[in-house]
Length: 198
Image (tube, rainbow, N blue to C red; front, side, top):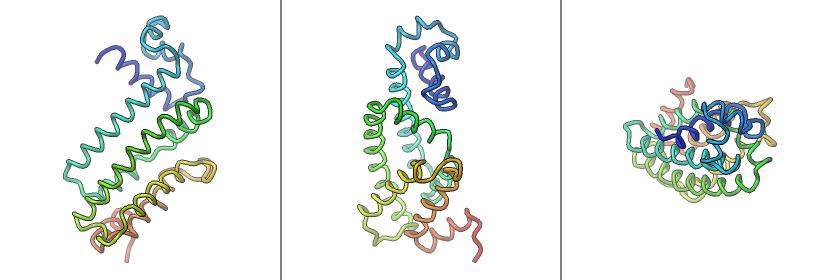
């Protein structure tokens, strides 16, 4: 791995764990075992480094999405895996980004939004092909609802992190919404995951 890529990788973990506001470029340099001068040779400032970290996250999301879609797991299993991966830490990171780096947040939010819209449609179509989602759903309406639910889950002004974990919210909203558009077979798979008894 090239030095620049390694810096982005290490810095992403640092920002995600400690927030993008409190982490200094001195700490970034120390975590990477390099001088601050070397760090600034690769990134002009902290905003530039944050943007590169976000672009790397986007690329990883795309790769994981492609891997998931090409794998043998059903769409319901992928929903369950997404539920398990929900993280409060990630929400805090993006909240800080929105507050302290609004221009960068808006720029990246649009990129992530466009990506999620395309992915959601592919996700729904595959669920129908697998016989797990109902055929007669309106793709545009359902896709928009999925996106809006995901947006609400991540908004701590609606659901504070102090009272609701993102994992809990994902279960109570997203998983239950998908259950509502599922066929009998899809419902059985979701209920098995949630341990719901008849």
